[in-house]
Image (cartoon, rainbow, N blue to C red; front, side):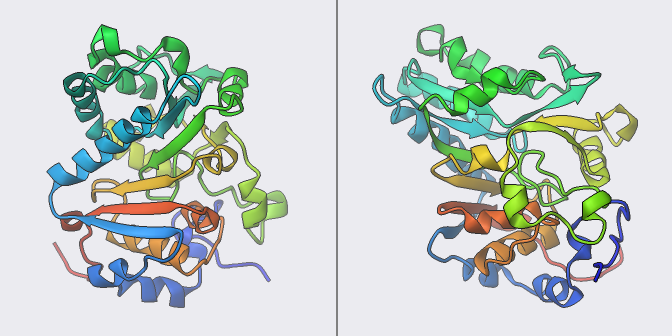
Length: 310
């Protein structure tokens, strides 16, 4: 039997196609309820200030890079949402004099336009943001070798090879989008073999780094956060790290300050992960099967799901 249509984009899968009872119960969760969702393999952490939140996020870069040695290189895969941690990372590297010669970094994703990645000098390029906010601010004597910076390109050969090179991905960081994605692992279109049911979690888990069509919700969100709402200026495709690479990361760390997904979304995915409810219409829920996941929240950004007029 076919599931209900999305309320937001009927030609796509998304969280509104889930059972109403589940959605209604999630909306009732309090901050204290969120704290109780921790279990073996899944941890919920709260921060009382944004300063503490972003410092803790930046420190994941530092602790990952400090583990890297010539015999055992390692690194972190990082997002462009949030980005507030990136200048803090550069400052910490410089102040603590951390030599990054054995450290690595993977970019999570990049826009894809006219058959190629968006150039790194484009105003909304993710690579540009990483370089401008972090890597270009690091002292020359401490900088990571250019060959240790792995940004996804239209030709994914080098990017995919970097994940198979024996370099440890100590942590994969991420934010959470309105479609409940990490990176650009968006829900699928509702068509063909997925007309009545979305891909199974097992099918979705087999996806590697690739070019993806972006869900309309994702296009709207990125227009809001990056282009003042001008959705016509937002690409409709992107290159993204996949579940295959995500499961190579020793830890997946998701950071929610309340600036991207809303109060309901910040409740839905940890509940599904905690209860091991996996559904590819909510891609983040698939992290229920990863052995080491941490959700990090700014307490003041969680909000409530009450209905009220503004």
